[in-house]
Image 1 (cartoon, rainbow, N blue to C red):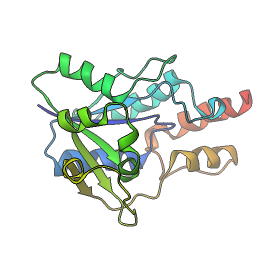
Image 2: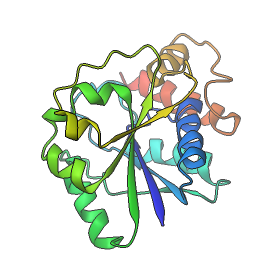
Image 3: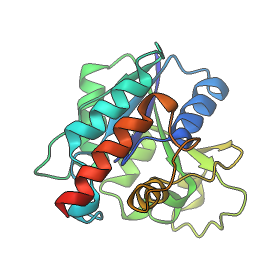
Image 4: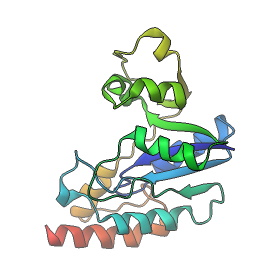
Length: 197
């Protein structure tokens, strides 16, 4: 089975994430997309990161009508940061016959050489990079490593989780940014978070 792994904090899940999943599943002929929500995020300030369980509820609600979309809880440890290497290792042990595709934005190219055991990852994982037309590549990977990356062209979707959070904080509408099915829950959860702050 061909499985695409789409990780992130999904803070919150939005239509841009779904567009990436749809592009990958179509262009790569994947059998499934696994959303891998991150519980712990070292680069996000705690007071702007919605509780993991609430982010999981929103994600579950969005994908419940997509039989090819699943949720993996491999990165649900809220105390420690898991390296991508650790997650892939676990997946390969439990899904040894599956072909794994790690889906990421083009911004990771410039930092991939800093990842833990990145050379092992390039050998053992299909890296699929969603290519933004305006992105300038300054990679420290050697040519052989760079050639292992697979690029997918995609129309840019001008939506970000931070913009959604900002709009909620200012009582502005988020229709069109997140799926309709989670608009009210998304507003409710982030309003509660803003109250706690």
